[in-house]
Length: 246
Image (tube, rainbow, N blue to C red; front, side, top):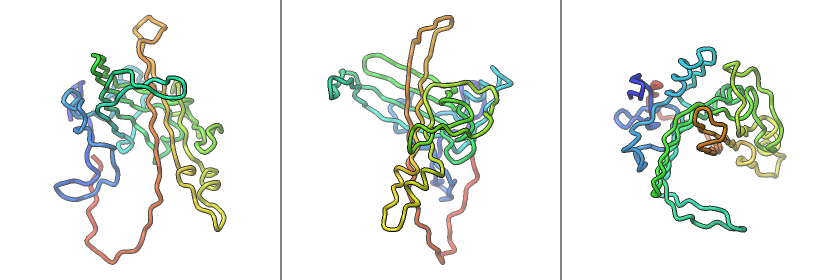
């Protein structure tokens, strides 16, 4: 697709090509065309903020892999506030469409805290936001162990080296989580939701130039839940073809 800067970018595609049946081997979350905001946003470009960062800070380039881009959306969300021990509607309904680069399969998930976030929202009270930016999730070069949510794991040198400190945190499982909750003694059940669950929490401020107070604050949260996969040998030879990465 053509991005707002006139350059070509990859975007959402289904995990299985509907015409050929070949499999890409990865997915990008929900099809954004189902969002009420899609008529306004169109296809979501993957990497447009990364490209802008190349120009703005040539020494801090952050090129992200394709498969980590994930889309999520929801229509007609009733906003609520906490009152006492419960929640009540505030009388405003919004549509949300978001995309975050959440590279959970590669080294990027450990050493790089800088990831692209697209955030689109439109509410029936007239509020409307469209923002795409690079977001720093916590400290560069580290993550926090997800199964205790307190242990900071030093994963290596940040890339780029000048990655900023950010709000929020990346809760990612490590070997100790697997040992504690999955590789359990005989007679016990493995708890995959405890041993492999991830939480990526960000806190994002948008300020007008020259102002210290925030004009907008957003705190999207993304979780990744791993499920066990059973594999067996098949005698079939007509396996689906593998697609190339877009």
